[in-house]
Image 1 (cartoon, rainbow, N blue to C red):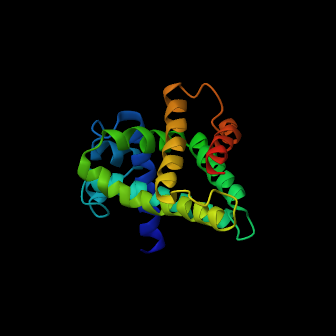
Image 2: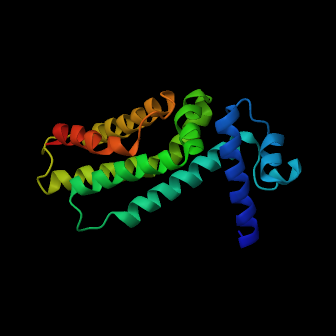
Length: 193
């Protein structure tokens, strides 16, 4: 994509993130997204097939950025414990800073159709694989139990972080999400060793 097209693509995703967070996926018409982006309704269809495509692209884009942030933050010198801490810290702080994204990723995913959830699941896959890579590293260097089922454990870790964020949203963000990192990772480590 040219830089101008990429800019408009990002602008539409930003608008969709806000509109979907505020109105829910089913209450968010393409016209509302276009209005928020400051473009004509038809312009959206130059970039996306339909509203479902917008949501899938939003997940791919935002989770792709998140995985890139993880990869840029975690070094080969980091222990598995340090890497797990960084993943949790980035996950919680990013969603705490962007409540609209938190609503879209936590609430809307659960309310969408099975077909849409499967497509979004493909966007989540690199994140799950990153967690598994950290677990495999920890098993290999003896930090984590040798018999650890890394495939199951990656799901448990992702699911636990997911639930912490959902609870924070449901509470009305009455406490700091980032302040939950230490206790969350401590809980994980007790089960991993």
